[in-house]
Length: 468
Ligand code: GAL
Image 1 (cartoon, rainbow, N blue to C red):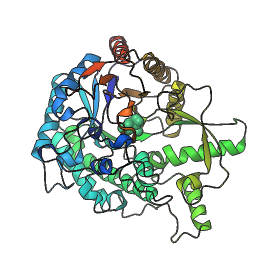
Image 2: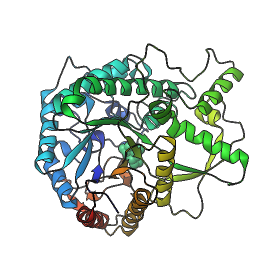
Image 3: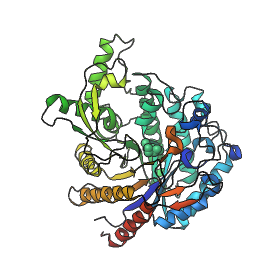
Image 4: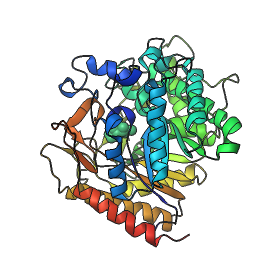
């Protein structure tokens, strides 16, 4: 079902696995700070040690090889490389660490996909306004150039920013992710805008300075649920579903893939609400100016993180000044969908196929990499994690159908995650790994789950069977 050369991968992120939070000159990130604030994270835990991949990388590599992955998606810790966030101060030990990881992968024939930013902003930059400050775009641009220059001879797949939606909303609207700001209806839009600028700067640098020589591809990872109207024939629910898609997937995909601007539905809703609320300014949604780098066309492929689906019904206009108020929709779980360990993750494999078809039709048949997809376990440890195994089998089958029957140009699939790790505000209570990590054991030993063994079988079977 899968074309030859299909990327079979697993993904991780620096803050979630590396530990070594102060090792060898690393600077603090906003997650280091956030975890120190009581009440922010489950049991006030942190990822100061986590899987200690900073010291135990070779064990991770063994896990990667045991699965038979062709690709591994990792992220670089910006403050490990540049402790104060700027290229004026480079931490050579950090460079050495990632050089070793990348070299080891290449030596084993595994291609790295590298994310520049996965939620862990240098605290020094947060102190200057973080993602709220328009200056961040140029600072990110320099960081990106530094990474292309340093690692781009070996890295051919780049992700600039992971899930700008989650960073903007959870970090700046809901305050449940670092930096923990709760500034509803304003800051998230500003942060999203600055993230798009930062991404565009990085893409343009790559395009003009590095592409010819390095020959890689670069994109940003956009997360989206699959959404359907709760009452299929109801015009209000259909409109609400379109609105919700515009505010999530469309917020970042529309400017990059379609128009260079936010989706019209989103623009209209926020402008109208801002006016009604006599907002001090034109609109709470920023506008793209001619002075800013062009955002349209700044993705060489569509990087999609998919976890779950939702039914949508029209809201009742009571959200006030907030993203929820602007969208005015209610999300509902279909009672027929099984729930994984975490309440938000309903198991809907066919939602991914639907979403892939939607992406093909809406964004002009892009090349797609599924950069994250996974299943959470909570509570009693189950090494025989049959449910997760079935989840992967069923979801991968849907990806196969999207390729074969719907002709979506999917080039790769990355399971989230290689290892159990620090699951943000839920810390270690939620396990997403294909390998179990024993956090109570000082050796942090890694043991393959049943789902890991089954994923390895899927990979080995499809690697051999793939047609050109
Ligand atoms: C994504 C995120 C990952 C991981 C995953 C599971 O939003 O990129 O870091 O935590 O969710 O919740």
